[in-house]
Image 1 (tube, rainbow, N blue to C red):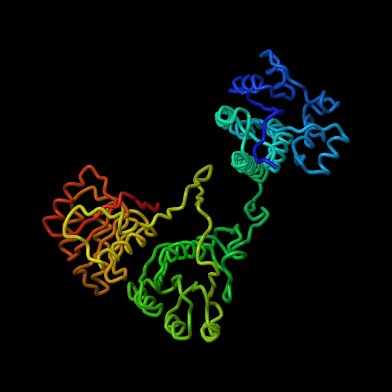
Image 2 (cartoon, rainbow, N blue to C red; image 1 turned 90 degrees about the horizontal axis):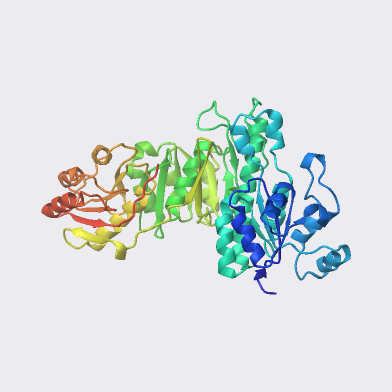
Length: 509
């Protein structure tokens, strides 16, 4: 059967009528039969547009003060019936149910009523039941039905109607189904938070799918973990239960390590890499990563992108670590780690994350964005000063750019020979971040002669170039884009520093 569906029948049930007139006039002009309820039906009829009432469709009146209107097989059968399904078609013919191809809903304003200080009774009455049910039914049957779950999507509906002349594609319906479930989820979350707001317990612990953690960032904070990572990607082989902070560090460690193809090891501490290196083999990579900062490595989260054998296990076992993540372990390696059962040993069975978005809570809501998966390639580097890059310089600069993505802004990473030799992060000025990185390198005994510098954002002033030159750094990678780029470029040229621009910023707040 065709994936395209012509809209022949639409159900419209909205609380707020703003913006609705254009839609119903367009549907009417296209010959679409419109079904509606209560105030929405009155509004449509007032425009001189024919509209079938839900009461006529169901042969049942709206009851319980409007609490029950659309909850009827004649409505939900029309939405949920699978087109071309023999048994569904037979039953629809038997009970006189006609298909509904478009569902337009705008839910009762629960959040607005709550924000306006409504009484408890007023707030409860603004919990939409029928509307949410219509949304979920239409979204479930997106193969045949287009759902518009809020007036926020009216402009999208108009666009779809114009582009397809009343016909929609499967992809279009699927996208709107996803939007519908996101809206429904958020609507229910606000209701749950309101109803649980007067309880003393952490309400998150009561939601389905929550795995209670020992505690949050600090012992006095409760915390839970939601997700399927330990069903799909990770297998914990031994050790105590992961903590909130362990999971934060694990997240950063595996996302960093998956950007490297060559043998690579990282040691993560407080959600920031304190050690990172590549090598000819994984033992060499781990040794160099540890030497990046042996002091900070104590109690860290270690991730490697190659299997762990007996030799590497013995080396790693020389220090105290919280968590080790690797794609595989030999039996001999596991025997070594088993001697200290509290150490958390995790197998990373896939080595990559299918999730392309990140989530972060903020006051009163949540931020969602695409993950920063951008990896710079040699061909993308724009040389703006100094001599052409050597192969080693290019490798170190690209290494540094991968590392700096996982350091809190403002961030600077110093690299030499595939090893992170200094880092400065979480500073309020870029020059302070560089000073921190240089001081760190000196404290650990690293020479910065010929080292590479990576910056997560542009240089607003040329002071970083001056400091880099004094330290012996000979190549710099940064996004560029400052109105004072020329000052940094000219100073780098005068010192013979090879500087490249990427055009891509990697802030991590």
